[in-house]
Image 1 (cartoon, rainbow, N blue to C red):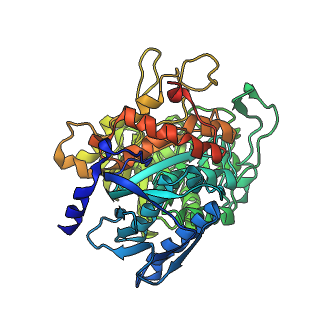
Image 2 (cartoon, helix red, strand yellow):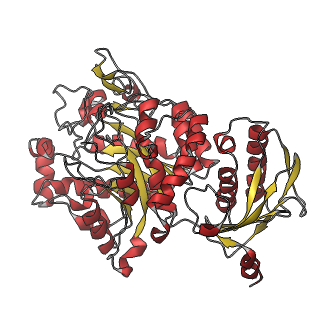
Image 3 (spheres, one colour):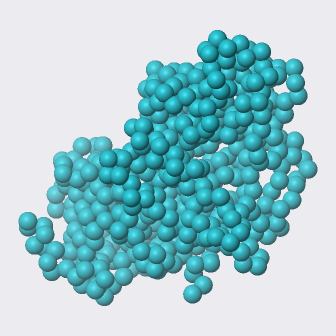
Length: 552
């Protein structure tokens, strides 16, 4: 009760004289009059909090000092300008901030909660703080305010495809920095596909020589347009130490990394390296050079091929500690199985009526193996929605269904089956309709001079922001199965960081707000004002971004 009485002296945000730039928008925020100017020397007191929580104070003061030239210190006292207190009633990622003219109170129940509280403080301060760029001349002041905040969804993800085109560890980290700035917490790393295998597997070295090299590649550049390089692309891949480096970088920012090895379809690069595991061991196999769906898939009836997959999993689960592992399962033609003797024999032995059931059996086998490794399987929604899929087989190990197309149909289907889903709406781009999508790799405008890319240019920032991930008429009984949202970025058209940033921003921020902010708290005009203020932070960070929504 005392806390709410203290809020009585504060003005609602809409009536406040000062603007507080916080994205994603907080669940509840009230803003008063006045500010707290940070002195050159101040303390962040963490009292008797354990090291697992107090480390967030150390990281905060380190970032503050580097960006501002101030002399903040983290200390085990209780009388600092900032005080940290344990609030066991707060949700796992929730926090409370009370900022007065004299002090800042930070409360949370977990290290993630304290991290997000400090991220909000950094976001409210001048743009160089979140950008991590030094400015010793600025005044660093916080508005008098009270924030009670927690995310709408537990899964707030970004997927980056590094198979079609490769991005270095440094470039990946820059995207992770953006994720952390906007409170996203899952990095879905699409490591393998038809166009390249990017994860070092020591037992199978040809995956990162033959499988990581394409004989040609197509590039779309912001300035030069689209062209073929007409030279080999690769070998490009991450060593196991580099993958561990990314995992550790994410861990400090409370982001988990879910690796994806797409199988048994989208497996051409692996089959080029090890054709003995394909349906045509004596046929021609080579890494694909363009997007699309290819029929050179794994022979799921070959025990040696199954062991190959398990060997790959064995090495990767030692690198990625998250309790999830993505096995793809999308866009897998059955033609090769229908003409392969081993697959035909297994089909007859099992008494199947559709060759898609071979894929369901494979999913079941691999999900069961992943369970022995302490992992829960994530897969694309074709695994439950494709014609002939054996839903009972797929369901056995309680997978998480990532829904892209038909997104809402299969999200509801998953929920009705008691399966957790993640919404990453595809929405087929059509010439004359603006459609909301979480596929943030598409052309976003039809204006002259817009860089060439997939789609018709109607997947705009506004359409992305206004997309509703959980329809209003979703039965209440199904709501617990809608676990979150994901911005998905495929790179068939994108080879360099400038174009990656341009297409992702600010649509990545739209999805971040959808993951954090309650649906009823979202407002396009308000978001546009806030994201416009973020231009300085993005500029300082050296990010390219689409400027269409800022022109008015």
